[in-house]
Length: 496
Ligand SMILES: [Fe+2]
Image (cartoon, rainbow, N blue to C red; front, side, top):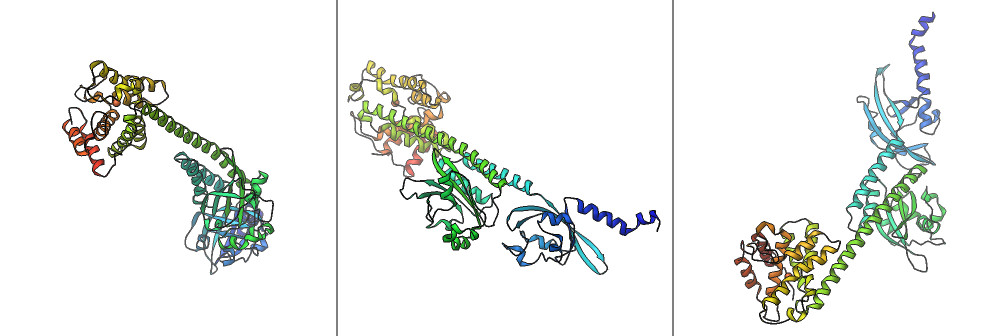
């Protein structure tokens, strides 16, 4: 055979192809009926085994489809068996492969049916390791979903529940829970948030030991370091929980120390596979938790701020009412009715809250009106009237000094304005009066008329509504009066 003949021989080409395939990082295997007939060295390296252990391996075998120490690996994704179909080519089939004593890796599998040759038909499959991409993608999604959940959380507890729920829904983990340190003498932990197969946690006493009952969660809290159990069934320390773990399909657990508002806590995550929590995954989870700590601290700050705003408003409301006991409860009732009207009008939650809070302070300026004028029965003279009317200006001035939003100032100043310009202090007309001020004006009139005052008894709700209706378009906004009538008809209680 001449040299050129040898080069052109198919056998020679195959030998070069073989050498090439063996030197790549891409694994190739040739299957017939789901059984490996040939493969290159790369695939043996990728699958942490030897080539001769792969030859004749039946990948459709049940054994390869769940946790198993007898086989070199097992996989999840039954589609891989379907991909051995000799008529269809598959692309980018992602298969998770688990190894005994090593973390799971992910492979992208492409298959190519081989045309019938010598009465044999098979499939060539190529495997490339995409573990890093899969990890990165999953963690990015987890990061995104967790931060979104925390961003809309109403408080710290809801934020933490969002975290454990996403760990299970998006991260694919079996159970996730957060335990807090308590002051109990036995070192008992309090499980505050849980998601996934939570039955695992029912009646489970978690302590930070030391003692037989101290598992990874307790240890993580006590030692303030990450604790991993790679194979629950093999962990002697977890012997009392082996049955429970088996029932709930828990094979590995990681517990990561964490802190929420200076309180020590642990985030525990369990998976239905062994050796899932490798260094890379733990690093990623720690990164996620560092981010969560910052986000939760922000939620806490907002909650505190909201709490202190509520406290401030309540205290200021109380101060006005101490001065004017006859209207005790007036601002609070006007606030509730304004909230109901604003909600009925379809304003968004934040607007409704601001209107309700500003209504709670609408008469703040009455602190400068002499108590004997406020409490006096009968008509007031011009000078006294002017003193009473000044409460709008003073209230607005006081609120302007505070860090409260402009709506507070507007409502305090303009809740006595009337559409036809007959109101005070600025005689605003029509659209010059904001919706917030129109709402509080109507709620104010309704409340004032239906409650007893020193100079007259209270009117009935129907009488008060009749006054409002008669002033629609002249003094009061029609849609606000209508909404007020609707919330009262729907059973809103103006209060005693
Ligand atoms: Fe007022």
